Amino acid sequence: MLPRQGDRDRCAEGEVRPCSSGHTVEAIRSIYRWNGEIFDKHEARVMLHTRTSLVQHIIDRTNREHPYEVPCVVATPIAFRNPEYLQWILDETNDAH
Image 1 (cartoon, rainbow, N blue to C red):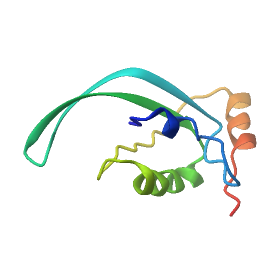
Image 2: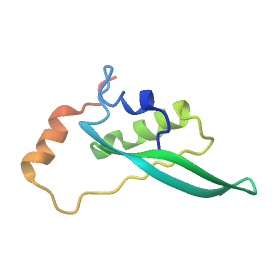
Image 3: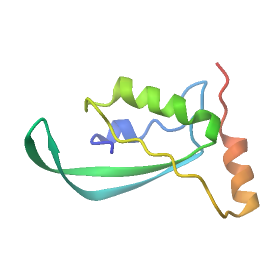
Image 4: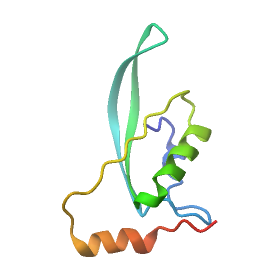
């Protein structure tokens, strides 16, 4: 979850391109318990398209920059895909440092 628009717009910036694209769903209602208190917040969900080798980079960056103490980052492997789309993801991402 990325609560601020600026956080969501930095997907392909910089030398390291951690994702080829991101799909944002703005109308997410999150209800959760944190430190004994119940929260009900409006957030956005972003699905980033990346390669396996960049997932840890995305987790590390999210942990550094996200306002939550424990932000949600979940990686889901692609079981079936359009081979050309997968190649596009690989072509548009890099892990150069």
